[in-house]
Amino acid sequence: MERKNAWLKYDEAEMKACMEYCEGYRRYLTASKTERESVAEAVKLLKEHGYRDLKDVIAAGETLKAGDKVYSVNMDKTLSAFLIGEEPMEKGMKILGAHVDSPRLDIKQNPLYEDMEMVLLDTHYYGGIKKYQWVATPLALHGVVFKKDGSRVDVVIGEKEDDPVLCITDLLPHLGAKQMSKTAGSVIEGEDLNVLFGSMPVEPAEAKEDETEEEKAARELAMKGKVKANILNLLKETYGIEEEDFLSAELEVVPAGACRDLGIDRSMLMGYGHDDRVCAYTSLTALLSLEKVDRTCVCSLVDKEEIGSAGATGIQSKYFENEVAEVMNALGQYSELKVRRALANSEMFSSDVSAAVDPNYPGVNEMKNSAFLAKGLTFNKFTGSRGKGGSNDANPEFIAKLRRIMDENEVSWQTAELGRVDEGGGGTIARYMAEYNMQVIDSGVPVLSMHAPWEVVSKADVYEAMKGYTAFLKNA
Ligand code: MN
Ligand code: MN
Image (cartoon, rainbow, N blue to C red):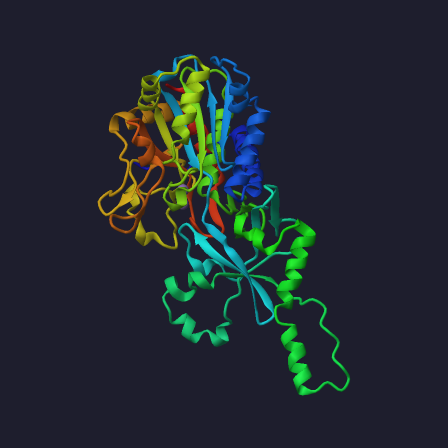
């Protein structure tokens, strides 16, 4: 079952379409380095395509009808967009669900400290990272700070060309013999992921000409904490925030810089957070390309997947179910039973990335059941670990139908497992949506260097994913 390289099937026009589509994705990814930014960028696109906020529809007491387009945002970190179909919702929806949170370093609640006349920010990592990848590389700070009066301050440091960047320093190899003998998992410890934030003290007191040793010591003692004082002054001047305001902040340290073309042939993209914003963008734009559908089509972008999908903004929250009920109510189709039927009769793509085979590390894969770069949208029947533990396992009836839809629409697609049996494993949002008794399968873009600060995808796979998602939504 050899799969063809997707690049080989493109004529000039489709090659151009693929490259242009990926330009849009590149802009989206560069602007979307946190879940909040990803949702805000998605809302911009939704509004451009005539989608309205469900809250406004409800507040105005309007009735929805087939062809209407609405979206709903949950806590600025989760989003669901609905294109209302001709058929009643209880017949089921077509759902594309991706996550917009990515592995990163979160700033602690009480982060700021001075050590050896340098100021550092203490972090707590989020999601599965190789900690050693985050040192000695330019980092940016993104997020929000809420002050006691409820006002919000948006922070982005390290992205504009003339912005300063931040970093976590590493030991020089000359003194690194002991460090280098450790295993990769412990060579950089979580508690040592401290971000260098500044090093300039406030103006020191003048030394007297005939200063005694005691006076000198006293003067130097008075300078302790003066770098931190300087940083706090800067934060106050620039953002109007004080040290206590970190307590109600959500600040994320991410790699600094834009998503860029990769390879001399420009066939790939290197960027931060392809997992899973590449599936978020392809899912969203698939929905946006449609106007009239039989089944109601939904794109849901969720938070917290990387830490188990828990919390009010994770897929395990009741938020999605509530919004389905709201939409059905606005359609005049609400009853508890009908909501349950709508969910149970739905079909869903859990749009999430797959691990692409890496020529540097072929040993972790079983090649017949692995995803390859440029071979298209990748279906994972199951995920999990140790004998499929904790996984959704898609039904063959559903897969047969998807094979037909993908082939009829000339989508390049492949199937994969996450590595060799017992090599490792992972999970997605699929299992949680399957609890509604709907048909769910994992499907997404293959990624190299997944969860590294800079991940790699093939533009052909990005384009094929969009085509595959669109075909799925269109074909009931
Ligand atoms: Mn993912
Ligand atoms: Mn992930």
